[in-house]
Amino acid sequence: NAGVTQTPKFQVLKTGQSMTLQCAQDMNHNSMYWYRQDPGMGLRLIYYSASEGTTDKGEVPNGYNVSRLNKREFSLRLESAAPSQTSVYFCASSEAERPTGFYNEQFFGPGTRLTVL
Amino acid sequence: AQSVTQLDSQVPVFEEAPVELRCNYSSSVSVYLFWYVQYPNQGLQLLLKYLSGSTLVKGINGFEAEFNKSQTSFHLRKPSVHISDTAEYFCAVILYSSASKIIFGSGTRLSIRP
Image (cartoon, chains in turn purple, brown):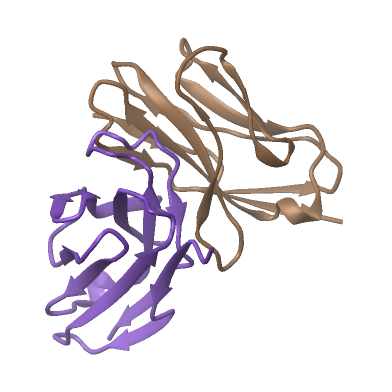
């Protein structure tokens, strides 16, 4: 089992460029999450998905879009990158079957380090 | 508003010494509480969680935490640390009533000296 995988591991963008961060899990989990981690701050939830075809906004959704392509995959898209989006992005998954299932253990990927110049 | 405070951004300790990492939260309603650990260049993994029941919670790798409702704290402890415990530790809180929002603290970097 690979668990949660993320691609790419590193990315440098110029302001205004777009890109998609990919995430996949092989644990047959229902829920998937995207977080960003900034220095001196805890993780902040960007978007989450409690099931295939559904997505919900988290704490900091502005500037991002997501797609729950199927049960395994959950992608995060930056349409027009800004320097404020320089961060480390983590994808996670859990067994939670509904949006209120945050108390379920979350399993995290290794992260994508994104720099926007 | 709900918030989580980790009072120490860095905690250096000697190997085999005890350690306590502090976490306080603010909430007027019941909460679920978590500690996650992040080893260098890895994602977070769950150390332990408090949902209900006994206020002393035991987790992986010899860690434990105690929920203190009156002091709104959930401090993490280990009686004897190892070099392999070098990592960043995050406390997190979820409101019991909604469970649809998780708030992470800013993290405590634990460095172990031989």
